[in-house]
Image (tube, rainbow, N blue to C red; front, side):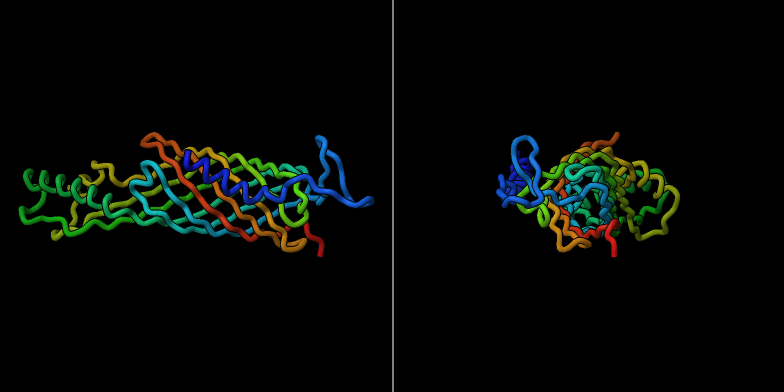
Length: 251
């Protein structure tokens, strides 16, 4: 419920200016569903650009990974003035939480004891540390609806539905006081602590598109995604700020 409250609060800021406007006679207006709106033409336009983001993993991934900044590429095509098809791709390398590193330590130490008992490593073998690395790489396609607004030429709040795939990679490699052999590698693989797998993602996004001029726009949004894979179910909250430009702009 707190996630949806955050989404609604963020969206309320963007829609505060979307109340029914009034225009003088002769202005470029049109009537849809009983109210007036300013016709800032977007139909047929392509917008593409770069964005920075901040990702907050939640659920199982949130127990393992720290919140992290990232960067990405986004684009959208306006089929009409009020509907657009878009995509979002980003990359981040979150750090692993210390408490989860301790869990990996314990798993590897337990496995190392078994290797010592079986004579597969020397009795003096010990674990020095665990080196970790992770990547979070989402790709989403979206359907976006833009609300009519009295500041439509400059400010367009929107809501979107997202579907896509998120590739998550977590790698944990032990550093030992003896040469690393195949038995150690097999032991680490058998613990299943390291993994790379795709998650199916579905979610919602709210935000606004602010026009600096006919060419440049700022796209700011907040997205929630539910993530599911064979190994786990999780979720993530992402804050995006992007600078996009109009490919249909005529110089």
